[in-house]
Image 1 (cartoon, rainbow, N blue to C red):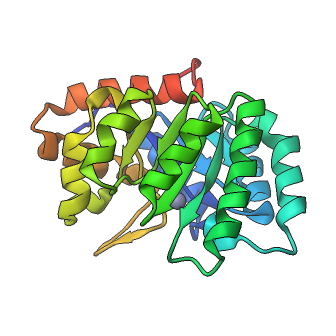
Image 2 (cartoon, rainbow, N blue to C red; image 1 turned 135 degrees about the vertical axis):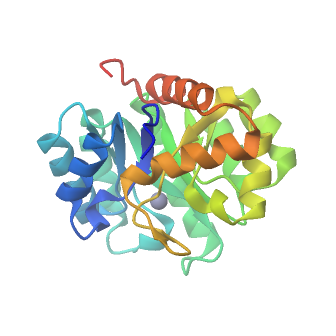
Length: 250
Ligand SMILES: [Zn+2]
């Protein structure tokens, strides 16, 4: 097995892995530098924070309210939970807009707006999920006045990439580069200074059921798609992740 340069998995749902502890150990042993673990609702956020506590300096928590998990009975409680606990986290996420989700667009936007305001108040980056609604999501983030944002698993239009990059926001690549030409085209167009690597574990990419160690697959695929040496991609994206999430100790 070739030894790959160290990289950070900037988006993993550790609480959804069948054996998170084994996956964390495996990533550490195989040279992954750190993992940003993202939450989706109160229970997932609690598990994420607990896991980060068990692995200080390696697992960094983000807490959020995923558009698939919105539930009017839990909105207030979830927003209050995030507001209270965000100071212990490196980012607010996963949040966003998904026009294939069951919640009405108007309600999604209202919740997203409140979440962006919380991130802004705490000076935290926001990790954005968007599907079929990239431009609106970008505009809402920009209008919220946030300085840092990550458009995760970016597969929006190519026209939007220079605008997102001009704000200093990031876009992240996943192992979907193995087979998805739209994601590959987008990632090829993202400037290296605005790119992050991730796995979105435990997403299944054809035969690959992702764990954080597979950020190395993302690294290899980004190098292939962009035609840039692995070492250069690893060094720049790691520097980007440290700057974005404030991981100065790594
Ligand atoms: Zn995700």
